[in-house]
Length: 187
Length: 187
DNA sequence: GTCTATACCTTGATAGAC
DNA sequence: GTCTATCAAGGTATAGAC
Image 1 (cartoon, rainbow over the protein chains, first blue to last red):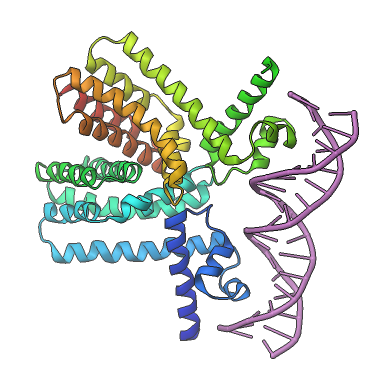
Image 2: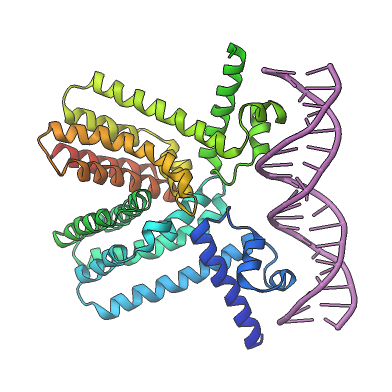
C-alpha cells in the first residue's frame, strides 16, 4: 500500500466524517462526498464499495481519536476527579455542539432507528468513554455502581448536547456544564 | 371540506408521523408514505405539495397531543411535584424509547443539522413541555430559575432517552428515571 | 492508482383522465 | 376527491480506458 493511496483514503474518511456530522448520515449522499473531497467517483469506489463501508471507516477513525484523547487525559491529569472534569470540560468548551449536537450521540440516534447493525459499531464510541469514566469511578472507590454512574454522566452530557443544539444557547451550555462539573466534584 | 377528506388527511399525517419516528425524516421517502398509507401518490399530493409540508402537519399534530397531555396532567394532579413526576413517569413508562429514542428529541436533532427553518417549528414541541414544567416550578416558589430548571429537567430526560436507545437496556431506563424522580422530589 | 462514461434505480413532483 | 402515467433530477453502483 503506497503513501499516496493512504492519504487519499484518509482524505475520504475525513470528508465523510465532517459531512456525516454536519448533515447527518442519511442526508449525506455518496455524491456529496465525491464533491467535497474533490476526488473522482471511481476513485472513491476504489477504496470503498458502499456508503456503509465509509461509515465503518469513519467510526474506526473516531475510535482511534477517542482512545488517544482519553489516554492524553489520563497522562495529563492525576486524580480521577480531574480526569472526569476534563471530560465535562470537553462538553463545555465545544461550541460546535450548538450547531450540530454531539457527533457520537447524533450518529448513534440516527443509526439506532432500524439500522441496528450499523449502530452496534457506533455504540463502541460510547463504550470507549463509558469504560474510561468507569475506571475513574472505580479508582474513587465506587464498586458495582461505577458502570451505572459512568452511563449517568454520559447521559447528562448527551442531554446537554441535545438542549444546546435545540436552543442554540451558549448560556445554557455554560450553566448545565457547570452543574455537571459540580456533580463530579461532590462525588 | 368533507369528512372523507379529513380522514384521508389525518391518515396521511398519522402514517408519516410513525415513519418519521421509526426511521427518521431523511430516511423516510415520499414513496414510503405512499406505501404505508395504502393511498395513491397523486392523492397524497392533493393534500400536501411537499414532504416538508407533511412534516409541518406532523409537528402540528404532535403539538396538539402535547397540549392535551399536559392539560390532562394539570387536571389529574394537584401539586406541582406530582405533575412533574407525571412527566418523569411518561419517560420511565415508554418502552418505545429503547427502539427509537425520544420522538421530539430525535426529530429536533435531525432537523437541527443544517435545516434550522424546519427545526424551529419542531422546537415548539420542546417549548410546550418547558413552559408547562416552568409553570410548576414557579408554583413551587422558584422565580427566575424556573425556566433554566425546566430545561435542566428536559435535558435529563433527553439524555436518558439517548442512552436507553443506544444500549437498549430496560434496567438503565428504570434506574435513571428513578434518579430523575428523586431530583424532582428533593426540590 | 486515476479518471470517464454510463447503466439503472429511486427520488420528489406533476398533469390529466376518471 | 381518486387514480394512472410519467417527468426530470439525483441516487448508487460499475466497467473499463488510461
